[in-house]
Image (tube, rainbow, N blue to C red; front, top):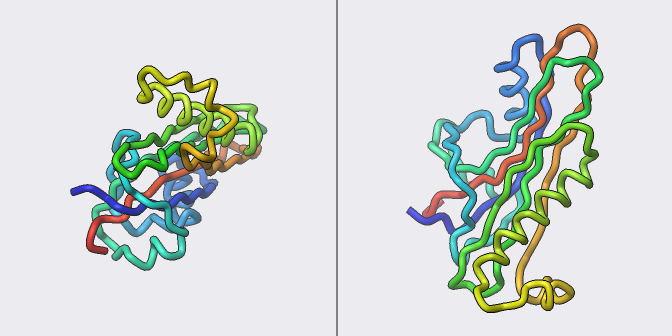
Length: 175
């Protein structure tokens, strides 16, 4: 069971109940109708990134789907929060890559996304034994595909729970 495709998505939800704010974030991300199983952060060798719209057409409601999920929630008024996923996948098709989840407060979308992406790149760098990663840093686009997705939100007054969510969804082989 090795997924050959993945897509990135994000969402935000607000509700008086924490669990329902998560449900609304999952709905906004387009993945509430699946049984999600959180897994650790490896991009399988040769796995390609596809558009969310294409990925969703390959899934069926109720299907068990593996994902890497970053989720951040609070009901503290006026709190800025972020959830992001960074991705670093080597262009060499026989090597695995990394997805990195990041949750934070007081970061904007770009900061949170860039931070998660840089950590994913750093994790990938640790797999290149004997190679000076920093020497190749300026040529990163020749070595790896990197990207991120981030969702920020500001919680409201009145005790509403707010959830920010960023997810890498693996499309099961054969879908």
